Amino acid sequence: MLQPVIMAGGSGSRLWPLSRQLNPKQFLALVSPEVTMLQATIQRLQGLDAAAPRLICNEEHRFLAAEQLRQLGMEEADILLESVGRNTAPAIALAALHSIAEGEDPVLLVLAADHLIRDTQAFHTSVRTAMPLARDGKLVTFGIVPTSPETGYGYIEQGKALAEGGFAVARFVEKPDAQTATGYIEQGNYFWNSGMFMFRASVYLAELEKFRPDILAACRKAHAGCQRDMHFIRMDRDAFAACPDDSIDYALMEKTDLAAMVPLDGGWSDIGSWSALWEVSDKDADGNVLKGDVLARACQNNHIHADSRLVAAVGVQDLVIVETRDAVLVAHRDQVQDVKKVVEQIRNDGRHEHINHREVYRPWGVYDSIDNGHRYQVKRITVKPGARLSTQMHHHRAEHWIVVSGTARVCIGDETVLLTENQSTYIPVGQVHSLENPGRIPLELIEVQSGSYLGEDDIVRFDDRYGRC
Image (cartoon, rainbow, N blue to C red):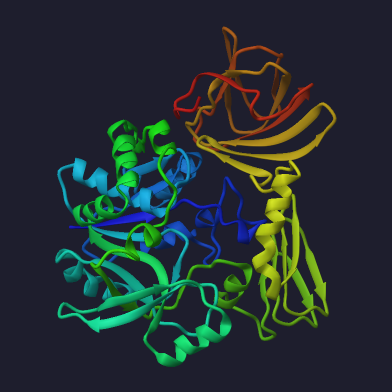
């Protein structure tokens, strides 16, 4: 059986301000307006003889991942949760251990959630070529047929042809300089390292035991203490936090003699920067990628994204302009690799624009922080039909709720009331309360907070159907 494993961790800081710590690029609709990168990765599996995909993601992204699976009708798919990021080698070990614990030894197809592959049929062909290699005990990686001397990717040197198809791996090469990359392209036997793999779960664990027993021991301990919470699989937090941080390339693929490579020529990109996204996006006659409410005059080869307001550009070239409700990025396309340095500065300055958007998604719906000032904050809250916020209280703030549309069931202390459009209620500081949407349409309300401290960590939860604490 082919078991897809989709790695949905990572922060995607190079695509700030769209990508944020709590809403990274794999959960964004970057290439197609209809589906996110994660959803596109899952849909790409259609047509393969494969089990339902198994996701690995950070604990703080679990509800975002679950909602995107729900939209695809895959509510029951397992989601393995990492309490902290420990890179790809431990993440894949958790997936392999989980399969073995269920009494199976499947061939794992390990994919990244944030890659673009335009030619699905080419992808399927490469996967089918890799299957007999993986079944025979090879650790297969997919080498992307290069289209340019790219310096942002590692390379794989092709070795001898294998009887089952594909090739042995002669060696893995670090990201080269431009001259070296040009030489690789001219030689014709070097491929981009895609970070996608296929192998039996038991073979991966055996090789990890050989080369990085410390990683495997920590992952075994973390998985031994795992607990199921609905379709979430929670690893032992302390055990996994003690696991070494290493990639599958460094930990295993560069050391094993079982490495094999199958070429893939399918319009692949890791969408690792704004310039990469510009390259794969549809453009107008002047080479501009325009998304949202954008007016561009005498402009060429720009990527301009407007999230919440009109963005007008006149006479500019080769720029990336990205507007969101709380931040604006302007960068030259040749300098976008340094966007991550902006994110680092935001973090070091104690700001919050790298963490989340103004709109914040929760398992029950979404809220938008529409205004704030000294001792007050205003939010627009949307609660999904049938959803319920936790029973909670706040030490430092009072709240006033005004229903805009829908019906709200509000519990304040021992009292429960139903509120409809244009009705309101008040929750004093320290009062235990909860909010539920008992109706069949979304509940929209305005929340006005007032008090000495308005941070999201001023929440004491007493009961939560989503398992938050």
